[in-house]
Length: 480
Image 1 (cartoon, rainbow, N blue to C red):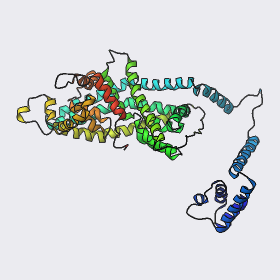
Image 2 (cartoon, rainbow, N blue to C red; image 1 turned 120 degrees about the vertical axis):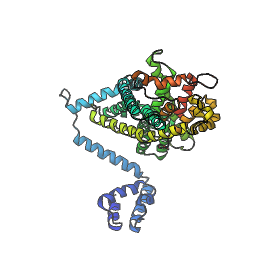
Image 3 (cartoon, one colour; image 1 turned 180 degrees about the horizontal axis):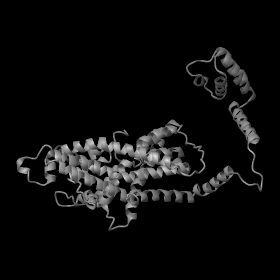
Image 4 (cartoon, rainbow, N blue to C red; image 1 turned 60 degrees about the horizontal axis):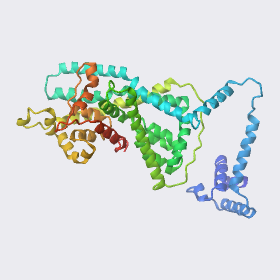
């Protein structure tokens, strides 16, 4: 190493640290061109490297193994010189106590059986909190939207502009903003798990499963981040060193149910089951089922990719488990604020614009004079949106969808949560000012909707089919 390092400094103009690092790489890498890069080695350095390789080949010396053994020997020497184990019977320091406590907790949290039960309990608690803790703030938002709708309606005279503001802008944006508390709760739990150190343990537990589908535990963090949004999840996949594992993770991350689909699930679950008729656990179970289907789909396609297009050696994972810490609520709150700002910004820009466009498409052109007195749904059939939905209906009819649902599907490719505002506009749902009525208005409109033959449109099977469609359907434009 010293001889090669000296030649690199004298003949190739390398600095001291760079020369030593490059010398070690040249001795362990069979391809010197890959190490040297675009600048070839000087003839003198190349001769020294070749002579040492010939000498080791003649002696039967494994250069790579020798260097690895030397490094471990140096590490062991440094450890013996710097680490002093506590004497038996002495009082442990705070650091020792923290380490021992962390090990005790890990013996349970990472246990092959108890670890999975704890993981499942944490996930179930997170989704249960989405339903139970968000009820009051959702009521506040709905009351505020109702109050705003009343005052704006009183200021604007009846007409197309009045309908645009009330039924288009306010109804569209309000139908999405009302789900902000659930999304904040989801981000709160994710931030809490990250700040306490449990997220790394969850990755360790999931490595046993992911290794069977061709991924490793490091893919768990990007996939879990995709529950919030697929975009940061895809960006987080950059930490995976192996290119094929990284690409496989990126390709399957969109299968995880992002927060934009959460309002759609909540709406369809509310239309499917009534909280007064069935236990709350049924709604939570349906929500968990949707997230399970997305996760199962991601694992299935990851296995398929690793067996075909991205075939390679089984991945290995080396991960450091950080010590447990009390959560830093400031960091958790900041993460919630960032996510909420992105969501509100999208509601105030993309969803507002799409709600206005959808209102225009759903109300123009006006029906002919002979059809003025027909029901709103009949008038909608004459509009641009109705024509687009009718064109799509033959493709989605086998799923139980009609042209009105087709309009929502088309609009939601821009942003998943737009489906709710689309349904609000299509079924003429507006803010009434009454908190209870506002909360249930869109849900009741879906339950009351019927087909031309009088049969219910949003049957339990259609609601389930629509939720499964959103689990596996093409991603939003931003993700693509």
